[in-house]
Length: 319
Image (cartoon, rainbow, N blue to C red; front, side, top):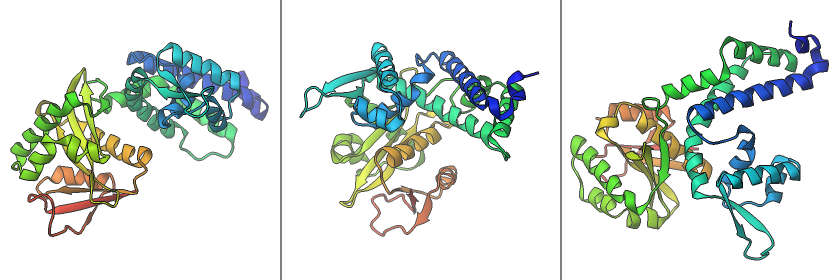
């Protein structure tokens, strides 16, 4: 018999502690399985740093209500792993601003698909009707005993990755310009024709996209660029077009395009704070239109002076 369960509400603190330790232990198993050098206890502080363009110890403390010693200990561990770097404040040189390092950014890209599956599994095991917190804990523990937390997460990751390989997402670099061009040109030639506007944008991404405040993302597997998508500014009203999404022919049919789409949408909403996105497509691409609708895009009026001759549908996603 489980003695803690027999204590009822009197043992709720101990029950929560035991449940937390079990979840942390299983999360570490997931990280180790995918060779990601990360401690689940560092997640809250690492996540705060990753979402800020520079943050101080005090700001972290205010965000999480952790003790200062706990924050300092976590910061020291992240620093020892090389995941963060420090810069002096321009006004107060005594104040240190914390940023993710290049190594930290790469680790973040590896962690994001794992976090997505962890989030999904946690929602699944915690979604049920309960009469009390104790009842909720009982049901969660029953589900965990029925099928291990780490095993369930790993299975979910396998279902949403390519051949059990984690897809990493990276921002545009000059060295990726050729990949951006070639992936899109191949796709256009396979399904349509390369229009003059396509050639201009694809051959000059710095001019049309990056230089105007846009972003280009790349999907990477084992150091190979396998897909790309862009957020391109259009007009002068802060509107962005989701565009230039292409996946390498040998990697199609493995949901890489959907993962690029998901990553791009989340970045536009959470990191850029955009109110909406638009895209142009063609109705002959039935699978693509279906996926766009699945992610919340709805059809809107297509202007007569559409930038693409092939476009016969315009869609919008409002956040």
